[in-house]
Length: 243
Ligand SMILES: [Zn+2]
View (cartoon, rainbow, N blue to C red):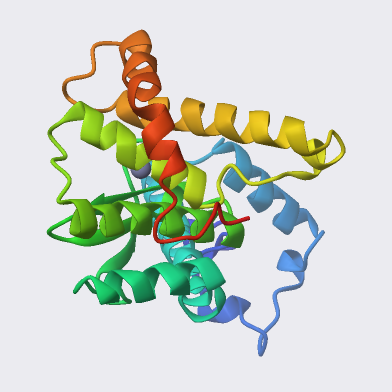
């Protein structure tokens, strides 16, 4: 029989047979002295060998990545089934001869902090490790779908920073990510309009900042401002800004 300090029987790892429900180890009941010791070791890493620590951290990361992906897939599935804006965009992309569905909308961990991305060759990426919730997944999908629609409809040259800025303005404005919040609701419609435009400008500039030709934050803001009026006014394929 393995000793009770066997690291393999730490909470969270696969229980060893002598600790399963059929042969309960009284020492390991929740709150018991051995349970406390192990939980403490587990949380602080104190008392773990270097090798155990590396393994524990790797197990933890793998578990988190798997959990993130599972949640992301659930939110993606929800949006594809029930989100009016995502279904509307999917339908309009289909009308232009494109197709975005489960097969090319992928949940994956991203190494830079962002919510998602669109690639004309691969489809849409949802960054599972930066997805905050169901609503965030829905906004991100809608945002990337506006890029996809623009790509098909306007033959966007993504290497042109002004083209990129224009699509970012439309994606931020139309996706709902700058929607009317409770905070602005209490301040009335004119504040809403100002808030929405300010939010769209700010978010579009953040995205344009990542363009290879962008020199700095001021350059990003300048390009966004230059194309703002005409791109913001173009709400196609919506009749107006979707709220
Ligand atoms: Zn974007």
